[in-house]
Length: 408
Image 1 (spheres, rainbow, N blue to C red):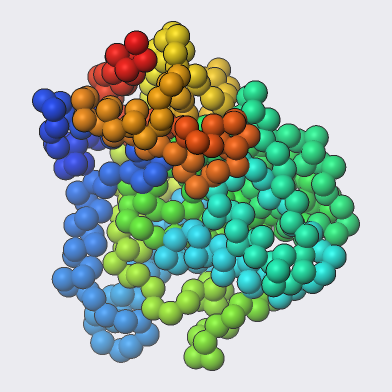
Image 2 (image 1 turned 90 degrees about the vertical axis):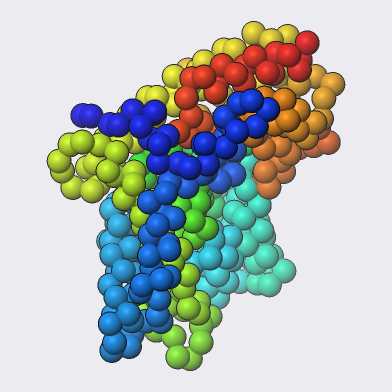
C-alpha cells in the first residue's frame, strides 16, 4: 500500500505554518483536539455558503442538505463498520451520552447496577452516575492499577452480577494511552445480559473501529479528535430500537437514528466531520472501498506513530527527573504519553515548553481525574504529549531536548 508521507500530510494543515520563538509550532495537543486540514474547513464553508437550509422540505438547498446528511451517515457507517441507520449525530460525546443514559434509565430502577471505571473521562461517568439519584441505580467503579495504568480486571469481573445492566468503558485512556481489552469486556456483558457502552473518543483517532468485532451495543466518538469540527457521533445497534424510548419532542421522528437526535443538527459540522473521514481515506493511493482504504491508512499511521512514541518514551525515560506513566511502547497503546517532571507543576512545564520551544502540550487531569487520583498526583497533574498524523521526528526530538533542559 502507498500512504502519503508525513511531510505531504503536513501541507494540508495551515496551522503548522504558525511560528513562535523561532520554531514552527509542534502540536502535541491532539488528544484534546487535533488541527484541521484545509479541506475540512472548505467543506464547512461550502455548505454554509451554498447549501445552508433545514431538512425535509421540497426545494434544492433543503434536498441538498438531506443528501449531505445521508452521505455523512454512510461515511461514518464505513468509519465504524456498521450501517447508516445506526449512526446518530449530536453536539458532542458528552451530550449524546447524557441523552442515552436518560433513555436507558427509563428501562431501569432501584436495585439495578451499572459499572464504570476509574480510568474514564468524566463524560463516561457522570451520565451514568446521574441515574443513581434519578432512578435509584447503584454505580460501581473499577479501579485503575497505578503501577501500569491498566484496569483491575479481577475487580471488574467480580462486579458483574445478574443485576448488572450496563458496562461503560473507554476504548483507550486519553491520559496514558492505555488500550482496554474490549473483547474481554464484551464477553462479560454477554455472559450477564448487560448492555455494553464504549467511549471511543480517544481510541477513534488511532485505530480503525469495528463495532461488530468489538460486539458493543453503543459506541461514541468525537470528530474533533480526528481532524474534524466539534461534532459527536453515536453508534446504536439497530436491533435495540424497539427497546429505546428517548425523551423527545412530539414532532420528532420516533425511529432511529433521528429519535435520538435532539433539535436541528449542526449540519455544517456534520459535513465537515465527514470530510475529515474522507481526508483520512484518501491518504492511500490504492483502490478499494472506503472502509478498505481506511484500514490501510490506520495501519500505516499506527506504525509511524508507534516509532515516534517509542522514540519519545525512550528519550524521556533516560532523563533522571522525569516520571512516565502507563504502558510502555512494547505494549499495544495509543501514541499518547503522560509524564511529570520532579518538582514542577504540570501547568508550568506546559507553559515553558510553549514559550521556549513552541511545543503545545496539554496539562492537568484531562477530565479523567480518576487517573491522577490513582497515581497520587492530583495537585501536580500530568503533562500530556500526543502524536497525530502530522507529527514528525524533528518535533519529537525537540520535545525530548526541551524536557531535558527543564528537568536539569
